[in-house]
Image 1: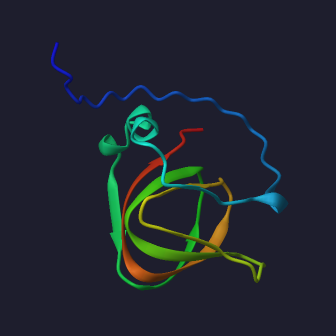
Image 2: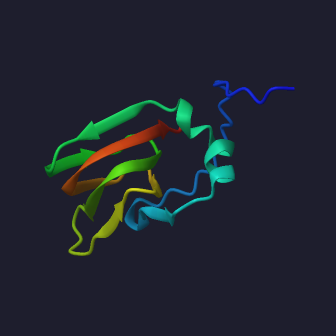
Length: 116
C-alpha cells in the first residue's frame, strides 16, 4: 500500500479553555520530530511570510506555527521580556496575546488557528 500524503481537514478541537489573560505564554518546541510534524499535518497548513521589520500583532485565536525560515523576537505587550524562535521551531501563541514581532530574518511559516 503506497503511503500517500493526503490533507484531511479533521479539526481535532480539544478546547481546553485555561485562559487567564495575564499569563499568556508563547511556547516554543525546538526541532520537533518528523513524526510529530506529520501527526499535526503541517504540510497541509496554509503558509505565511514576512520580511524583516517590526510587526504589532494581536492573536484572536490560538495559533500554532512551524517556521521554515526566519528569526523572530516576540515581545508580549506590557513586558520587557521576549521569546525568541526561528527556523525549525514549532510555536504556540495563545489566544488573546498582543505582541510585537521583531523579525531579523525573513519569516516563512506554516500556521493553523484553533477554531474556538
